Image (cartoon, rainbow, N blue to C red; front, top):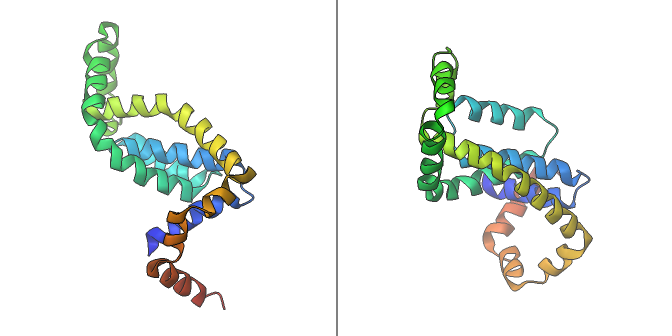
Length: 175
Protein backbone atom coordinates (compact mmCIF):
# COMPACT_ATOMS: atom_id res chain seq x y z
CA UNK A 1 0.00 0.00 0.00
CA UNK A 2 2.87 2.37 0.70
CA UNK A 3 3.94 2.15 -2.95
CA UNK A 4 0.46 3.13 -4.11
CA UNK A 5 0.63 6.11 -1.77
CA UNK A 6 4.02 7.19 -3.16
CA UNK A 7 2.85 6.80 -6.77
CA UNK A 8 -0.36 8.66 -5.93
CA UNK A 9 1.64 11.54 -4.44
CA UNK A 10 3.91 11.54 -7.49
CA UNK A 11 0.93 11.83 -9.85
CA UNK A 12 -0.65 14.50 -7.63
CA UNK A 13 2.61 16.46 -7.80
CA UNK A 14 2.13 16.79 -11.53
CA UNK A 15 -1.17 18.55 -10.87
CA UNK A 16 -0.17 20.43 -7.73
CA UNK A 17 1.10 23.93 -7.22
CA UNK A 18 4.71 22.80 -6.97
CA UNK A 19 6.89 24.22 -9.68
CA UNK A 20 8.07 21.93 -12.47
CA UNK A 21 11.61 22.66 -11.27
CA UNK A 22 10.86 21.24 -7.81
CA UNK A 23 9.42 18.05 -9.29
CA UNK A 24 12.26 17.72 -11.80
CA UNK A 25 14.83 18.41 -9.08
CA UNK A 26 13.40 15.68 -6.88
CA UNK A 27 13.35 13.27 -9.79
CA UNK A 28 16.92 14.15 -10.78
CA UNK A 29 18.35 13.73 -7.29
CA UNK A 30 16.38 10.51 -6.86
CA UNK A 31 17.78 9.28 -10.16
CA UNK A 32 21.33 9.93 -8.94
CA UNK A 33 20.64 8.04 -5.72
CA UNK A 34 19.07 5.11 -7.53
CA UNK A 35 21.62 4.73 -10.32
CA UNK A 36 24.59 4.15 -8.02
CA UNK A 37 25.16 1.83 -5.07
CA UNK A 38 23.51 3.54 -2.11
CA UNK A 39 25.77 2.89 0.86
CA UNK A 40 28.45 5.33 -0.17
CA UNK A 41 29.27 8.74 1.23
CA UNK A 42 27.87 10.51 -1.83
CA UNK A 43 24.71 8.36 -1.78
CA UNK A 44 23.97 9.27 1.83
CA UNK A 45 24.71 12.96 1.16
CA UNK A 46 22.37 12.95 -1.84
CA UNK A 47 19.65 11.29 0.24
CA UNK A 48 20.03 13.97 2.92
CA UNK A 49 19.79 16.63 0.18
CA UNK A 50 16.61 14.99 -1.12
CA UNK A 51 15.10 15.36 2.33
CA UNK A 52 16.40 18.86 3.11
CA UNK A 53 16.04 20.70 -0.20
CA UNK A 54 12.77 22.18 -1.39
CA UNK A 55 12.25 19.48 -4.03
CA UNK A 56 9.52 16.88 -4.45
CA UNK A 57 10.15 13.84 -2.25
CA UNK A 58 7.59 11.64 -4.06
CA UNK A 59 9.29 12.31 -7.41
CA UNK A 60 12.63 11.45 -5.80
CA UNK A 61 11.28 8.20 -4.39
CA UNK A 62 9.79 7.12 -7.72
CA UNK A 63 13.08 7.99 -9.46
CA UNK A 64 15.06 5.95 -6.92
CA UNK A 65 12.84 2.95 -7.62
CA UNK A 66 12.97 3.30 -11.41
CA UNK A 67 16.72 3.97 -11.56
CA UNK A 68 17.45 1.07 -9.20
CA UNK A 69 15.61 -1.30 -11.51
CA UNK A 70 17.78 -0.33 -14.48
CA UNK A 71 21.07 0.27 -12.66
CA UNK A 72 21.97 -3.43 -12.58
CA UNK A 73 21.56 -3.65 -16.33
CA UNK A 74 23.97 -0.74 -16.74
CA UNK A 75 26.61 -2.03 -14.31
CA UNK A 76 28.88 -3.42 -17.06
CA UNK A 77 28.85 -0.02 -18.76
CA UNK A 78 29.47 1.73 -15.45
CA UNK A 79 32.33 -0.66 -14.71
CA UNK A 80 33.99 0.18 -18.04
CA UNK A 81 33.53 3.92 -17.50
CA UNK A 82 34.81 3.74 -13.91
CA UNK A 83 37.77 1.60 -14.92
CA UNK A 84 38.70 4.12 -17.60
CA UNK A 85 38.41 7.07 -15.20
CA UNK A 86 40.41 5.34 -12.45
CA UNK A 87 43.16 3.77 -14.60
CA UNK A 88 42.99 5.15 -18.13
CA UNK A 89 43.76 8.79 -17.37
CA UNK A 90 47.41 8.88 -16.22
CA UNK A 91 47.46 12.39 -14.77
CA UNK A 92 44.62 11.50 -12.35
CA UNK A 93 46.45 8.56 -10.74
CA UNK A 94 48.23 10.77 -8.21
CA UNK A 95 44.93 12.47 -7.37
CA UNK A 96 43.23 9.11 -6.71
CA UNK A 97 46.13 8.03 -4.50
CA UNK A 98 46.01 11.27 -2.51
CA UNK A 99 42.25 11.07 -2.21
CA UNK A 100 42.45 7.51 -0.93
CA UNK A 101 44.78 8.64 1.87
CA UNK A 102 42.28 11.23 3.14
CA UNK A 103 40.46 9.64 6.11
CA UNK A 104 36.85 10.21 4.94
CA UNK A 105 37.34 9.67 1.19
CA UNK A 106 37.34 5.85 1.22
CA UNK A 107 33.76 6.01 2.56
CA UNK A 108 32.77 7.23 -0.90
CA UNK A 109 34.09 3.95 -2.36
CA UNK A 110 35.38 6.00 -5.30
CA UNK A 111 38.00 3.31 -5.98
CA UNK A 112 35.22 0.85 -6.96
CA UNK A 113 34.84 0.98 -10.73
CA UNK A 114 31.04 0.53 -10.67
CA UNK A 115 30.60 3.24 -8.02
CA UNK A 116 32.83 5.67 -9.93
CA UNK A 117 31.24 4.90 -13.29
CA UNK A 118 27.67 5.12 -12.01
CA UNK A 119 28.38 8.38 -10.18
CA UNK A 120 29.97 10.02 -13.22
CA UNK A 121 27.31 8.55 -15.54
CA UNK A 122 24.56 9.81 -13.21
CA UNK A 123 26.08 13.29 -13.12
CA UNK A 124 26.24 13.37 -16.92
CA UNK A 125 22.62 12.17 -17.22
CA UNK A 126 21.30 14.49 -14.48
CA UNK A 127 20.94 17.53 -16.77
CA UNK A 128 18.92 15.82 -19.55
CA UNK A 129 16.77 14.02 -16.96
CA UNK A 130 16.11 17.26 -15.08
CA UNK A 131 15.10 19.21 -18.18
CA UNK A 132 13.18 16.26 -19.65
CA UNK A 133 11.14 15.84 -16.47
CA UNK A 134 10.53 19.57 -16.28
CA UNK A 135 9.23 19.54 -19.85
CA UNK A 136 7.05 16.50 -19.09
CA UNK A 137 5.44 18.25 -16.10
CA UNK A 138 4.69 21.34 -18.17
CA UNK A 139 3.22 19.20 -20.99
CA UNK A 140 1.16 17.18 -18.50
CA UNK A 141 -0.32 20.31 -16.99
CA UNK A 142 -1.11 21.83 -20.37
CA UNK A 143 -3.36 19.07 -21.69
CA UNK A 144 -1.58 15.74 -21.61
CA UNK A 145 -3.47 14.77 -18.44
CA UNK A 146 -6.85 14.70 -20.17
CA UNK A 147 -5.55 12.50 -22.98
CA UNK A 148 -3.94 10.07 -20.53
CA UNK A 149 -7.18 9.73 -18.54
CA UNK A 150 -8.88 8.41 -21.70
CA UNK A 151 -6.42 5.55 -22.18
CA UNK A 152 -7.91 2.10 -21.60
CA UNK A 153 -5.05 0.99 -19.36
CA UNK A 154 -5.60 3.97 -17.04
CA UNK A 155 -9.31 3.23 -16.83
CA UNK A 156 -8.60 -0.44 -16.07
CA UNK A 157 -6.10 0.45 -13.34
CA UNK A 158 -8.48 3.00 -11.79
CA UNK A 159 -11.23 0.37 -11.73
CA UNK A 160 -9.06 -2.35 -10.18
CA UNK A 161 -9.80 -3.73 -6.72
CA UNK A 162 -6.39 -2.72 -5.39
CA UNK A 163 -6.88 0.94 -6.30
CA UNK A 164 -10.43 0.95 -4.90
CA UNK A 165 -9.18 -0.66 -1.67
CA UNK A 166 -6.40 1.91 -1.46
CA UNK A 167 -8.89 4.76 -1.94
CA UNK A 168 -11.14 3.36 0.80
CA UNK A 169 -8.29 3.00 3.29
CA UNK A 170 -6.85 6.39 2.35
CA UNK A 171 -10.14 8.14 3.11
CA UNK A 172 -10.71 6.42 6.48
CA UNK A 173 -8.58 8.83 8.51
CA UNK A 174 -9.73 11.99 6.73
CA UNK A 175 -13.37 11.90 7.89
